[in-house]
Length: 299
Ligand code: UTP
Image 1 (cartoon, rainbow, N blue to C red):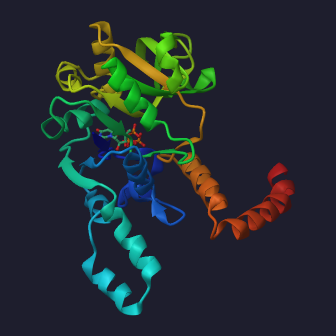
Image 2 (image 1 turned 90 degrees about the vertical axis):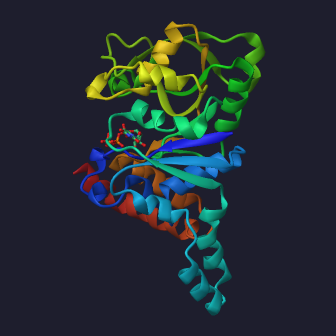
């Protein structure tokens, strides 16, 4: 099974930090966001990852390459722990890359993967969405795709007023035989960035997908939609209308959108608090900081 990680967007919600540094490389404690995502793919049994990159994103690929000079220096010093940390990203999966020449949308970015992926089902993981390692979703999604043969999405529930920033689904209960895989629903309609009035539910599509190879042909037929971009949701909507089964699993674990400052900060704080090394001292400091700044924040 292959995975595609689109990482060619302009990351305007995180400017100016992302002017020269790709948002996928912003560190959560001491690892770039993207490393967690590649680790998630590797844990789900994926061995081949295609990164869709763009201008100014070459450093993303460097992170997953070997660094012989640095490695030999750490070896000379006998620093086995840091040596392992430096080598680990290059050992997770086999990394391939492809350039999206212009950021024409997520659908267009996924379309760039066609020659690498061929006609096989594949996973798509967005490079700026962080999901809790403790409750992985991807293995159940891969299983669901193998059983249904169509598109498999991941949903989270949001407050009704938040739907207009996302792809939203109308759903009905899935067949009994699929429910062992979690909160599985069958999708009847997909709408990209609806107004709260036209949204069919408050289930938003989040950044994990398992798609059949037929998606490439649908992307080619998809016209620019919301924001003038070729939207993956629109291509999937086309397939749904033409009879491709579309299922989703409602995710109840922790998920952060690290593509904007608030989500990023939440991910950093959660991960730092859970880390066995820095966690105890960080939690103690954080509790004190919150207690002492409560009055100031209230004022
Ligand atoms: P986003 O909607 O987060 O867009 O894309 P963005 O450009 O990265 O960020 P903002 O909204 O301007 O802040 C979702 C994912 O799709 C990728 C992005 O890199 C991100 O991982 N993407 C988006 C592409 O690879 N190419 C595109 O043309 C658009």
